Amino acid sequence: MKNTAIYIHIPFCDHKCIYCDFYSLVSYDNIEEYLKYLKLEIAYYAKLYSQNRIIDTIFFGGGTPSFMTPNYIGEIIAEISKNFNLDQNAEITLETNPGTVSKQKMAEFIIAGINRVSIGIQTFDEKELKFLTRIHNKETAIKTVYNTAEAGIENISIDLIFSLPNQTKKTWIENLNIAASLPIKHISTYSLILEKGTILNKMVLDGKVKMASENHDAELYKYTMDFLTNEGFTQYEISNFAKENYECRHNLYYWEYRDYLSFGTAAHSFVNGERWWNFSSLKKYISEIEINRNAKRGSEILDKSQILDEYIMLGLRSKGINLSEIKKYSDDWYFEKKENINSFIKERYLIQTEERISCTQKGYIICDEIISKLI
Ligand code: SF4
Image (cartoon, rainbow, N blue to C red):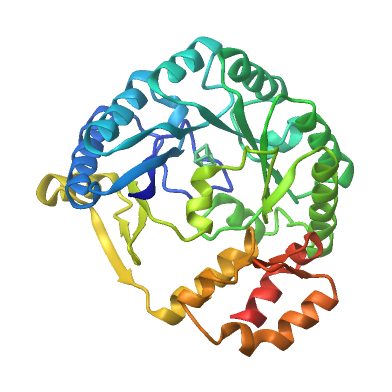
């Protein structure tokens, strides 16, 4: 039996945030229709891949999955359970935006099967929330965490963004202090990235907004790692911190290069060394599923050297390169890179144990540079 993860993309949002480049729609006209086609896609791939597999995690991402009704989410979980072998202890995560769920609605999500919630708070600072055009305020963000905990979810994660334009170290520290006071088990902290095609990108190009400098970004990132480590969180990926036993099992599938199936618009899957991706447009997704029962836009089978490079990159960004596993992709890599590896170890950017080579916290700060030397 092979453990496998499933990702479900729910593309509907209340509005478009200025920094967001995810595929999301602000019209709700097709919500019910989308459910029908998701079910058809799930059934199609189950015929191909359900044998000898156990579904270990399901992740509802978006968009804003918490806008959906608990019944809607429950129907998708039931469809997966009907078509695949769903582990009864599977981790089932719902991405949730503050302001979209009451305690009652969260309790109904639990009945539907949700047992982990990832809340997209981004910042507790009122000015920064306005700048990011989020629909919630500080009070709603905090209330959503408590509502979730009181409804019965123990495994709560929050997302925060740092290096926002004009964000001072002081406001970022305040964000971290509030986060640490909440009943959460996991934090993802991302530095704001300027994505092409976003409103924010245009604002920067027009000179209306200035992005934070690299030095400021590195300073906030270093502070974050020290702070969260002191608060009892372990860093297990460049942007992710968890209390003991609360690492996100789903995300580990991506970082450890294990199989995952994804359904919905713009979804990417990776199974048996093949990667494929769906059409992004909802209209196209629906028409493709109608005709072919799948909405595959493209696919690739990675060759050995691509797999090796990706394995190294993902390993260094997370828990490290497993020295026996990497032999599956290359016998020579370690010996070819030994000099570079040793010099990074000497400067305490990398650490090597019998089992693996990993970035230290100092190493995470220059992770891209390390990766470029080791691939
Ligand atoms: S709520 Fe999330 S997915 Fe939707 S537009 Fe905002 S950032 Fe993007």
